[in-house]
Figure (cartoon, rainbow, N blue to C red):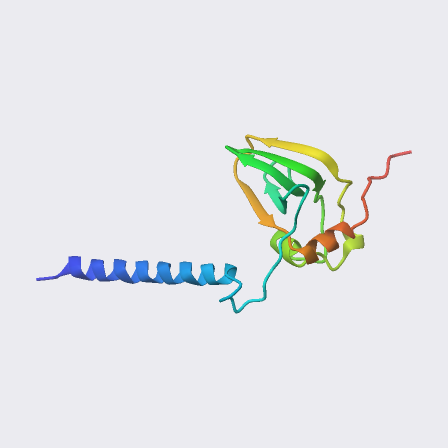
Length: 147
């Protein structure tokens, strides 16, 4: 007779052990004392608010300080829309490394405040100091007006 319950329990235990190991590894990455990766410093300013890439479906992508994120409503301060970028493969890379082609990017001027309300799924990636310097080096893009 098959002892399927023991086999299932053994598989579940292995999965749980792998998950716990992964959690410990992730905790180690954020614990500067045990991390083998170099410490990464994320930007905070404007009274301690984190500076992040905020990716939404309809409003688009912003580099901004997140003032609040409560129940699907996100308040952004000093928000700069990321309209088009080059010199990086992904937004995650932009948030971590910045762009190698700041003059090819199209980032309009920052606005003091943006309210994103009821926008569905959102991706928020903290920006490193290195990436912020790169993003700040992108000239303000203005679309030419037709004559």
